[in-house]
Image 1 (tube, rainbow, N blue to C red):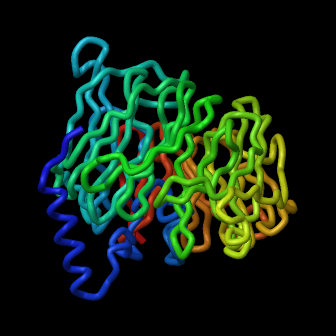
Image 2 (cartoon, helix red, strand yellow):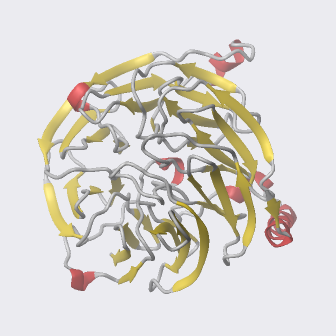
Image 3 (cartoon, rainbow, N blue to C red):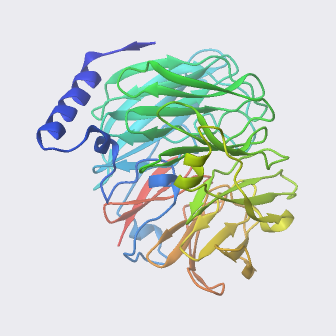
Length: 431
């Protein structure tokens, strides 16, 4: 592990300016209203705002389209007018190896601003996975991305102008399908999930230096592919999903377990999501025997009364089998929750109690997760079809458009644009 003074000095200058203005350092990591700083945006909630976008378009309507090196499934993230994503080329880094890329493009016109290359081994992975599936996470201090092989899980940190800040090797990563999770950020900490087939943990690294701030060992079951949910506020939480522990709430400052409910019997691929006073998570398998669990978040009074001991939250409702998705993460738009199934069946349930509102088929196979934007719900099928439905009490398909190639990446919304990533291209469409 090593660092450069460039990234550290940038964070120190930013902190000093904020303190002079009377702004707490903890506010530094907050994203601007127009940013999409991590996989599925702030709090991984998939909320793209109320401004409408076209429901359908052709290839002539793209604001811009650029080719990416190699292939990948990393979703785009956006910070202050810059779009970040990752990809990998096989066979360019030596025998049985390749090169991974983190690329930065201008949100306005797609021009390449910088690109970092990371040669290294390429492991076998599931046919629906890639060597660059995890998405970056961005804040004021830098750009963070993780990738893994059987030999090591690597965390890369760059400044916004593309200089390497530090690199961390967190040890072997064992998973039959490869790596697919993304890091999350809480102020000056990079939260790295390592739920694998070998010794598991969740680790917090200093965003400025890469030094380990805390490590929480985890029980080992099947490898998980969930991105941590970060909830900020008076009682901040990092929520993890995994087969061995179910849903777990952790204090991001200390790594201490605040609450936990062991409620899963299968692998977790989707990520936990907040729905008002509830937190949702799913587990399952490729055959469709899936489960969704909705837990009630413990109140401040409950946490105070626990005297520092972990709480077991109540299960508010549970949805089983064909209703719950396996790979796509649920989407909450207020009183409705959308469960976008892997096989193209969308189920809409009431957020409060899980009661069925409607269910219908849109077709296709899906690995990407839905997002909400302009009164619609948008998702992308594995063969690259963008499907737009109304956020409503009945299924209404508003439009379909093609990306022209495979896509397993979740769209992003920022700066008046919708950003889509297919295996080999990054594209944007305007309002």
